[in-house]
Length: 474
Image (tube, rainbow, N blue to C red; front, side):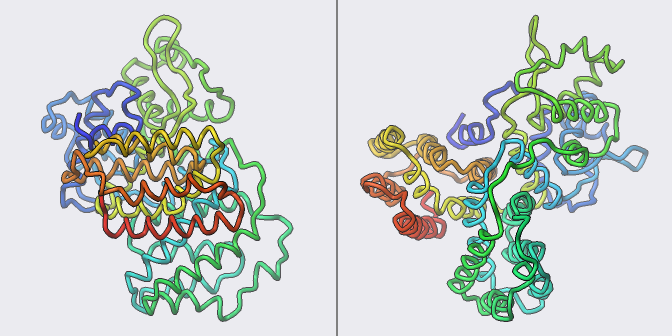
């Protein structure tokens, strides 16, 4: 594999399991959707035509269609005028499923606010840079007049929409759903309703004027206000039946119905590593053929809920890592919206604008030594392999302890690696020298965990990452 392929595999965790025919076909079709001009509602072809086009059996083609349908990219319509009909994944639907993923992972308020701060400021900056017209701002004006938390969240969604970046809107929809889980129950109604004319119009005026600094300042003020409304408490960990519907879509086939029943069982009482049974056991339980059961299992594997191990005493096991399924869902969303790979890379830098400061500020002495060693390894090679840089970035991300930022970052890195063919295999050390120097400076400071020191470190890292997002040294 070349560097881009290794980055994709590492970012999606697809190197952890063998690739199956249906998954390979689903990816090939995704590539064709990304490069085609077919709009949502267009027919990709009938089951027979797709089987012939990709030289696979109809059962494999049907299974691949099921995977793409789960990801929101279309629906297999039966009949003489049917076929696989393309659709554009909905950001609110996908965002809710991603929120469920983070709920299952036990996301904390601090982790949510890490992501909110970076995303809301990025959305404001990009929306101001886009210079929306007053007509385009009408939806924002209506949202800003809504009272309470729903109004604040609606404003964030409209700003993300004005920024014109599909991934950004998906991020905001996910964060908005999670934010509701942490709202204080004792917040005074008058505080929830009060905004004042200045607060209502400040962002509107900044966006209309294209004033990036003013838009970012207003977003920072709104972030501080939102923080005062939220409190840490246990995040819901078990999705309710509607969330299971979002996970696997409508029960259109017998395989989907079986997958939904098993998903409900896993999400309500499943324990990581538990054995659901062998293929034979499950075929008897549901009274279906092995072909139908394997289609159901593939849907569950695509969500990241299970893994299938061959051999005596193995079978279908509940997984403890579900990030691969969430990333596949996000990738399909970007493919369906035909997001620009170069822009995805730029967003990646801005999403991580505070991560180096968070990583060093939260690392203990042993972890600092680990980060220092990872940095030294990359610095010692000139030019260095792009994949080697990913190891350093992952180390920084782990220490930052911001799983929401990490998961979306992995998706953006995978999307750029997959759809931007001009990525260089090797890079000169000078291309990342400013990033290396930044981490080295932070590591040499005795402590940046105190509020004042952290604020300064975040300002420093944000300025550099924003500059890198514009110059794109990668």
